[in-house]
Length: 121
Image (cartoon, rainbow, N blue to C red):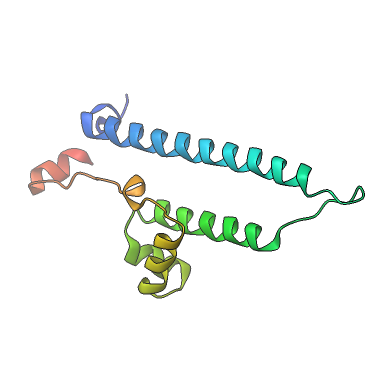
């Protein structure tokens, strides 16, 4: 038998939100790969491939921040702790890279009463 939270509306909404975030992440990765291929084709010099170091560091940093926000459910304090950096530093970089924190916020329903909590177990 399936668990109750698998079929209830809140559980379904949470699963749909996770799928939406994954789809968005995949779309961003596809855009990044296509962009990298365009950069690489124009950056070839005498048959040698060149890499833009600063651009690659920026992409890596953005991925780390997005991952930390995903793991923390969009909570910047927890994401900063996860990345071992100050909250103000994380916030500055989120603004610099124009990362949407709202896309990572999770709305996990909180039980209204202990009986409701026990029903979810």
